[in-house]
Length: 237
Image: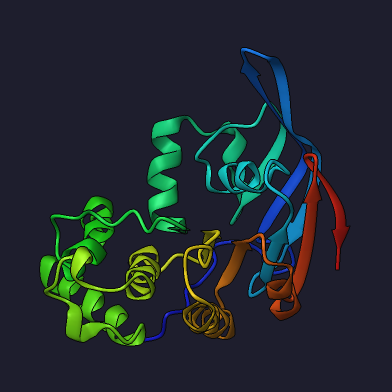
């Protein structure tokens, strides 16, 4: 079984495209402009790393690409889908099948086993039978090197192992895009490098990985490195 997935769009078009994306938030202190006219094109199979200081707009950018939040103005296209036009319920269904999201805090359900955590997105999407869900979840845990821990609860394994479970869960429905927000921020350097190698192997298999980090050294491992400052792209290489 290959972790790669076909992308339902013209290969000559970008897999992810943002056009003039602006995001404003209302706060007690007034209007905050988190993103100021972002233009960005990402192709299939790229390893994109976004860096920037806290408050630069990195997490807001993740929320735009994953459909976790809506744009104030502009357009967001992912795998040919106009995310900026989707209602929250449709965005949730689309995200479950198209974008895997990995959080710094893992977000594993503490009362479910490792295996059950990875099976859960497949159950929500209704894409596999129960038997297929179990088989695919075990396969993904094997790929992450943590299959022996399948029947344990998240609290019984290390932070690095939990992050690998989170990656396996994000891959459950074989999405073409994997988005990771500060996935190595709470890991030691050795474990962080191991997790980054996992992302690199996924890119080698055709996945598109969009990784947000404070660590500028990680950008050296990317096919595209983007720097945000005050809601704007100030460097892209």
